[in-house]
Image (cartoon, rainbow, N blue to C red; front, top):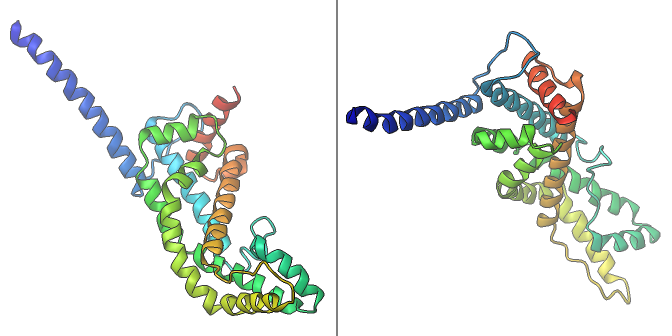
Length: 253
């Protein structure tokens, strides 16, 4: 009898440990491409379905966002994310346009957006890595926490540093390649030559364009997240329909 009662705590520990291992394995498999295909798109999803469904949604949203923004005019053609000149240069832009330097200003703005488009293509692998490292708690918070931008906030928290690290050298190279350094430098030079201009423009653009590119990326991801949470037609698989249909009912109910 004494041996039996000694065995019970060990059995309990084994069961808990095995359960945790199963959940961790499920998260790892979901992050490594294992897709659970439910036979129906209604009902209460299992833990594995929730993990796999969220993984599908995040991959769909981040792939679509990075693909659109890295395309030609991905930034420049979208007024919501289009890069303008830095705030300290916008007064200079207004002054220079009055003096007939419209093309110089236009070229500078276009080149900033081309640099951001170049950098956006580097984001996809960073998001894939972030999806793989999600915990069960992350999945629960994102799906059932009540916030319609929880996934976007998760990405901001775990990827901003990596995005900045990856974007900055690409943007630095791209700014030179597309002429931004030249055009913005010329703009700054022309403005700084104007008599009685006391607030000179700093022609260094790397940090500004990097941050704006990241901001634009998260803006698009937030749009995609909201879309899949609220728009049935965006749930392109039975698994997404089941998981996000359940989440929507929980959120609204």
